[in-house]
Length: 258
Length: 347
Image (cartoon, each protein chain N blue to C red):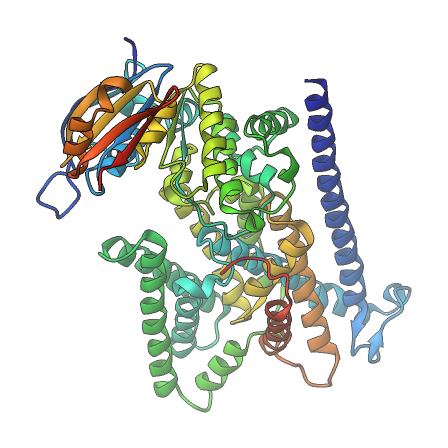
């Protein structure tokens, strides 16, 4: 199995804190697959995401991205390789959706340059990929939560990344929009993009992940194929409450026992 | 697929149409600025109150002198200064992702005012001393705010900068009050008070040349990176993920905007509200994208300050201080904008 990201003994402690937020983590995020990161609140999921983005740097251990140390990537090449869909983003200025998606082209543009026609075309393709053509010229300040999430996804796609990182992509969405986002994520995976995202809903993992990583108390609890991960004993241990799984047709669902 | 492509090109067409409209608007305002500058050159109290006939320039040597040596440098300063204040305000609003800030925010204006007042008290009203001192203290205020913000252990980066800016601004304001207390009421205090009201009344070619190159350079730099300034309005983690060196680029842009601000403050005193109100108007006319809104802001700022200055020096037989006019008009515009339903941004 080829790894998009390979982490070895990664440890990170926040300044002025005693206990590490992430400790001795060994993890392979397989290339071309969808990996979901599960873990209770405060387990270190966001910290791990920050480390993958190089927003924070590990105190110990190494992170490799496509076999090169993450630290050796230039800002520009990192922006072309990895992109982020943040959980939410305050929209303070009334950029149009298209203008906002065009921001994703910056790793391809010189500091003094503005987007070209080719960039506009790519932005339109990204907008079409997430199916929001009809709002392309609306100000982002007027969008609903679901639309906003799709705009952030389109902007990340405009970076034409090999790896897409997503912070809880479905946590603020209604069931209809959740289904829509899951459908889009499956399509992106079919196109060969490596996906890695966090969620608090194991059923979402069952719906689109190939691979699951679980962290608990700053350490890796499990990493492996989705069908081995989503079992009642592991899930119960992860969340500290009894969990059960059941099948509905082909679908695997996860729920709390009480 | 063909349908998708059709919609795609229709969308692209719509985008380029909008860009075309913004370009025409920029051109229109540029022309308006040229016309207004021409009128302002001929407007005044010599040879008689009103607008002089341009043909008289050839016959009346004194008129030519007044136009070329008194009005022209002043008009250029008003245009450059207005553009600088509006551009700096626009940039500050973008960087702090807050439509209600201007350079006063990081203590820059208060620092520059303190520096100017200190120079007036110590050296009398020497243009060079006031400029150097205002610029130094403006930058010192920015640097102090920045340094303090790095050391604060509370809140995110923007909040920390804002808090330290408030503290630094308050310290310089207090310092300014102390200078006023000890200043000689018959000389320095009057100079300080008049300078604080803001005005271009003592513009000469010498003062103009001492600050205009600085402002031109700053405006050119901001104009060159105008699209990228958009990216600095994003959440910092997101901007990082898009491939931006957030702190480095923000510091550079803040430095350039501050230099432009202190340059005009040092010769014209405190001219309020331009940096706050003009970027709002610019975003209404040119959209949020800094690619058009920043040059739009520069043009509108230049127009606004030139118009205010021309009215201020011609309306009454004694001059109305520029800062008084911009504050009056700016505050009224501000109230109008904030009470209109389609407020530009969510606050």
